[in-house]
Image (cartoon, rainbow, N blue to C red; front, side):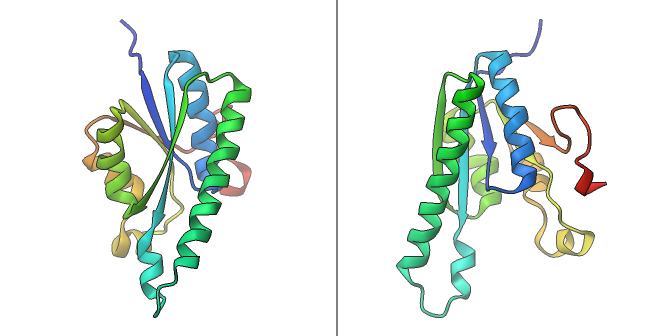
Length: 156
C-alpha cells in the first residue's frame, strides 16, 4: 500500500530554499490529490529589538506575507493543485511550524526548505528544520534539491 497524504503544509517565506520546498510540495499535493496549506510565520522576535514597537512594522510584514502567499497560491493553482489554503501566524516559527499550525489544520506532511545556517548559528539559535524534525507529530520532508533532484548551482 502506498503512503498517501491528504493535507500537506509547506512553510514559505520568499527564500530560495522555501521556493524549492514549494515546488516539490505542489508536485506531492497533485500526486496525492491533497490539500496544500501555504504557511507563513512572522517572527515577532524581530520586532522586540525596536525600542518603540510600531504597528506600522507589523502591518508592513503582514502585507508582505499576504502578497507572498497570494503569489504562491496563484502558482499552485496554475500548476493544477485544486485545494489550497493559506495561513499567516505570528510568533516563534519553530513552534508554530512544528506543532501549532499542523495540529490546528490536521496536517499529515510538513515540507520545509533546508536552512542555510552555519554551524555557529545552529549552535546559538538552532535551525527551524531541526526543531520541526524533532517535535512534529507528522511526517517531515526537508527539501534540499530542485525538481530534477539536483542541488541548486548557487549552493554547490
